Structures are given as C-alpha cells and as structure tokens.
Amino acid sequence: MDPSKTCPNICPTSDRREDVKIYKEAGQSRGGELAHAAPYVPGKIKPPEPRVYPPGAPPRYLPQPTDSTSGDILGMGPIGPWAAGHLDWTPQAGTTGVRPVVDKYSITRYSTGEWRKNNEYTLTPRATDKARALESQTKQDIQNAFTNLDNKLNDSDKKLGKRVKDLAYWKKAVEKTLDAITEEIDTLDKDRAKLKGACKILMMPEAISRECLELRTFRYEPDLVRDEAEQELVKEVAIVGEIRRVFLNTLAKVEEQMLRNKAAKSSIEFDWSDKMASLKVDRKNVSLSPDSNLLQWHPGVARWPENATTLEYWQHYCAESVRNCEEVRQMSVDLRGDLMTSIKNGSQDMKIQADRTNAALAETVAATEEMCAKLEENLKENLQKIADIENLINFLKESLRKVDERNKCVMTRLFARNYERSNVENCRDEAQYALMAEAKFIRETSESLQDKMRQAQTVRSELMKYRGELEKDIACKRKSLNIDQDRCRRVRAHMPTPEEFAAG
View 1: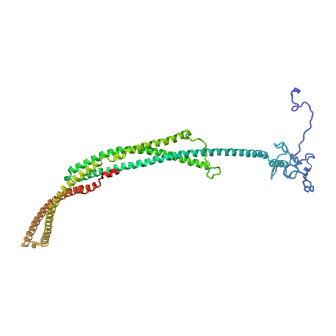
View 2 (view 1 turned 45 degrees about the vertical axis):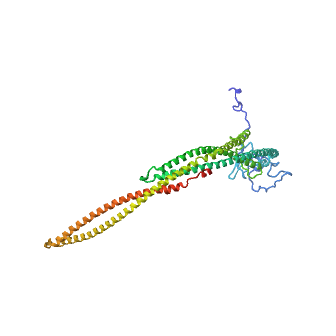
C-alpha cells in the first residue's frame, strides 16, 4: 500500500504511540477543578457564609458582577441535590456547560445568572420611547383632525341653512297654490252637489213614476188594464229620462274636471308633503351638533341615493308643479259658468205631466170605488145564505147522531137475542121480527138524512165558491184602490216642484 494515499489518522504508517485520553468515571474528581467535590468526610460541613455584594450593586434579582453562566460552579460531589457525573455532550452543552440534571425532585436547566439576566430583560421597558413618540404624533394628528372636522361642520351648517331658506320659499309657494286649488275644489264640489241634488231630485220623480208603474203591476188580473193613468205614467218616465240625459252629460264633464282637480291637488300635496318632510329633516339637521343626545350609528349612509336628483331638476319641478296646478284650476273656473243652466231645464214640463197623471189616477179610482161597493153588497147576501145552509147542516148532523143512537140500541138487542138464547129458545118470534123491521127502518132513515146532508154540503160549496169569487173580486178592487188611491197618491205627494229643482 502506498503510504502517500492513506490517511495517517486512519491508517497509521508508524508504530508511534500517542497519549491516550482517560475519562473520569461518574463521581470522580476532575483534579483540583472542584475542590469541594471530594468524598464526604464527617465533621467537615461548614456553616453558611453570608453573601457580600459590592457597593452600588444592582438588586439581587438583577445580574451581578460575580455571576457566571458556566455550570462548573455547580458541585458534582457525592452529596447534594445533583446526580453523579458531569457530561457535556447534550444540546445545552454550548449554552450552560451542563446537562440537565434530574433527580426525583426537580429538573435543573438554567443557572442563577441566567435567571437574573432573564429578569433584567423582562423589566427593561423596550417600547417606552416608541410610545412617547406615538403619543406626541397622535395628539398632534387628533388636534388637526378636529380642527378640520369643525371647519367641515361649519360649512355643512351654512349649506344646510341656505337649503332651509330655499325649501321655506318653495313651501310657501306650494301652500299658496294648494290653498287655491283646495278652494276651487270646494267651490266646484258645491256646484256639483247642486247638480247632483238636481239629479237626485230628478231621481225622485222617476222613482215615483216607476214605483207607481210597478205598484200597478201588483193589481189582480181583472184590473190589469192599460188605462189612461198607465199611459200617463209611461210618458212621465220618458220625460224624466230625457231630462236625466242632459243632467248626466253635464255631470260627466264636472266629474272629469273634478278628477283633474283632485289629481292636481294630490300632486301638489305630495310636493308639499315632501317639502315639509325635507324641511323638517333639514331643520333638525341644522339643530344637531356632536353634543346632541339623538345621535346614532347608521353604517353605509355616506353614499349617493339611487333616486337622487340634480338641483336644476328640483327647481324646474317646483316651478312646473305650481304652473300645472294653476292651469287645472283655471279650467275648473271656466267650467262652473254653465252648470246652473243645465239644472233648470225641463222642470215645468215635469210639473204639467205630473198633474195629468194625477187626474187620470183620480178618475180610475172613482170608477173602482163604485164597483167595489156593489160587490160588497152581493157578498153580504151570499154570506147570509151560507149561514142558513150551515145551520141546516148542523141540524142534519144532530139528527144523524140521534139515529145512530137508535141503531146501536136495536143492534144490541138483536145481538143479545141471537147469541145468548140457547137451543129451542132461539126462535123467530114477533119480537124478533119487530126488531128486524126497526133496524131496516133506521138504516133507510139514516141513508135519507145522509143524502140530504150531501145536498146541503153541495149547495154550501157552491155558495162558498161564489163567496170566494166575490171576495177575490172585492180584494182585486181593494188592491187596485190601495195601489191607485193610497200608495200611488202617497208616493206622488212627494213629487218635486220646479223651485226645488232650481234650488238643487
């Protein structure tokens, strides 16, 4: 093997012997480095010596000049709280020089000097200078910020005050227009009320005429005739219809104008309401300050609303709203000029037609009363005959009851003789023949009386039928009299006069 190609530390080429390192066993002394690590000798334990700190030394919990971070100061003797041995191959060997010593009580990792250095690090105020600088800068920034905030607040207050003045001006203009259109609506409503009153008054004669016609349809069949009164009532309804057509045409125009007036008023009221709400909001905003007790958080309000308009459009809208309302009001004033003329048309013709109808009804009533009196006279005679026949029927019923009693008597005798006599005693003697003859005569008499009863009942039925016919005819005439004389006359007493039409 070539000696130049070998490592002398691995493959030595000579027999040179080097010093062999000898390691101490656990618990052995390291040769004077730790004198107190000698084996225990009885009586050699010394009393405690007080620690003396140099003058001006820091507190005992802070690092001292005599502190050391080496673990060699720790005694590794055969007694004490330490385990035997001293090894330095652990990861902590470069920091403390000792391995963590473990016994059954504790684990030791740091020295007293390290504990004091950690206390010094903990008590050092590292952020104090930074805090002082931050405090000074922050106070200056806050002062500048509040100065700017006060300027912005004053500017906002001035702009809000100007806006309140503009809103107050337009609110007053809108209120003036609103009062004018409201007064016009009230005036037109009064005139419309007159026209509606005329229509209602017109409804009365029409309702009277139609009610009279309808009432006359309730007459019974013999009196359902198209007499002169009927024709006059039909003509009266036709005249009312023509007058209504004129009234309704005028009323339609008034209603259309009223809708325009109300629409204009509603629009101007909405505008007034919006201005009042905006004025209230801005006045409230003007009165608010950072010291007010009505302040709240409203996240997300610092943005333009989607329905926000421009200032130019707002001014244009205010002027147009007032102008449109004034135009509608002028149209309403022009329409009210022709309203009263329509109300007075046709009232005199209706009065004349009502007089003609009343005269025809009076003539019909007189003829019906005469017929009704004659029918009542015939009814009295018929009732008397019915009473006589009913008395005869009652007498026949009493006679039949007496005949039935005699029939029961003879039947009882015959039953006893036929079934209670025995043997040869049950014979046809003269008494038996007499009882049989009596029973036959009673039966014939009963049949004769029953035939008379039937005849009397037939006559009574005919009289009752005739009575019904008379009563029906009398009821028919009284119904007609009640309709024509009482109900129609009472209804027609409310027929309006031309003066009532003119008054509306």
